[in-house]
Length: 381
Image (cartoon, rainbow, N blue to C red):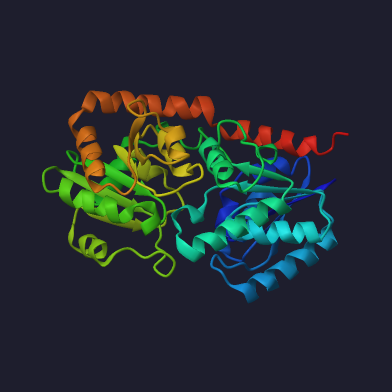
């Protein structure tokens, strides 16, 4: 059986491909490579694949990057894979270089977001060069949204012929049977709400993701501080922090400390309960590829307030299954929150439409089969 090596920087990113690795493993021998961590063992067991550890940093670190490149090269020379498929920026760059040096014929890279979009000055110039070089080493590049494909072409990172979006977008799609609000009993949700001190009459806004500046948390918290003065509302923040890579502003931290209507529950392995009792997902990110969180919310019948960026504005149609607002605009977040609170009938229509759109367009099995077709094309001729 031919081998496919899938590479991500950290194991949690490999975990975002849950189910897909096991599916592809029925047709090829899949080997997963990432940095080490508790979730790598879980992936190995749940997906039934072999894994290797190569530590990669998410920051610019020439010496560590060279060490990772050498280790990847050694593994690929030993395994002789038919395809190397990388995800995440650092794994993409190092993985594509290592695969090319190792003589791997088919080198695929999925783009699920471009950190360089928010970079400026010399850092932006450097990141642009790295991105171009990564795509040059790849034989096929898969942006996970049509908006991302457009950005890549506008920036001149590679040619149109090398790019392909799978389906309507997404790297792994959504398991709509797993993300289903009907799986949760009312008593179960009431108990969770009680534990979080949420009252029945309160309107619940939820954010799921990394609690960092790039996700628009500073604007979200400032907007909620304003809206919470006039309404019975709660904001549930589900996710982990990255204080060293992308810290929040001191004023944001101060609001988080003193506003009792903001509840931080940290990272959760199962985010579904927090969607199940939510009224609206607020996701004011600065940049995305094709955000799983917005698809998950939709599958759980939760409409979203999202920023007008690629991925988000492809899943959400303004006024149909959510609202689209400008990036970095506190007043726009306030107005969108106010609209959702005041227009209960429209909110209910959006809620029902949200799941329908995800079920019809983004089921995970469809994405998996389309990706399998891409792999199988390499065996033709």
